[in-house]
Length: 317
Image (cartoon, rainbow, N blue to C red; front, top):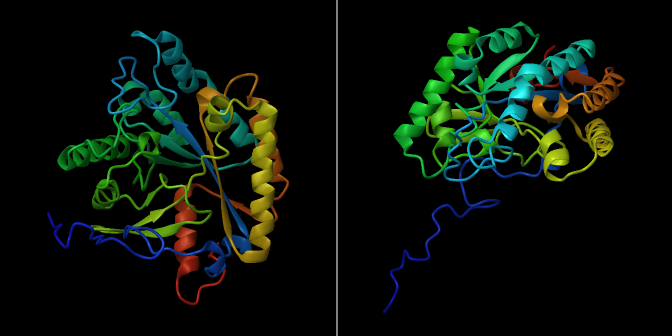
């Protein structure tokens, strides 16, 4: 039986990748970007403040770091809760002592369960972005488009009301998306998304609702990825993070701007035996302040847009 001519058709076949979310390009071929103050390297420190429900469904898959034991899994639930009760305060103190301005990726449910925590985060000199509703409300292809749109809207409206801010950015739970997620984020007024990790600089994405910027948030040097999943030591994590920082700074000097993005989890790095490791990393970054511009993600987005405009040189301070 002969196949129809369209059986092997690939309507999204194109140079680079088989989708139309962004124009494929090599980083080394793009025009160089200078950050505010004519700095070569931008530093983004993201702190994920998450809500894991005790009765986690794990549908359609179990989220890393979620509940793994039979219900009620108090062992893992209370460890995640430790991050929001204890660890976050150590992380905040370390950031404040190092004069670092963080970005907080916050589960919307926390605005209902722990409003005092949200108030504390809004008092920090940083920015709050959305981290989905909970770590059990995943954005996948199994979710109906209308249901996903409602989930995004509920998350953003709750956080915007609780913080009094615009909530311009988004980090999906488990960094997982459906095919509709970028379109729905743009529809909801989100300006940038941190789920995709395929670059060392921001880049524009295409959606049905207008532009959306991808701000890649590295997983390779993330605390829970290195120590929790790869089971490397705390000292090894410090070495990996500082090595990545040093390399990107050297590359940025020669080739144009780069973005160093560090993802942290208070239940992990806020432990008494690990917080000194974060302090060591922040101290290393601070030693290079003459060449580093450190800012929350939204300000990095604004500077990137400014520097990417035709005829632009260094981003405006």
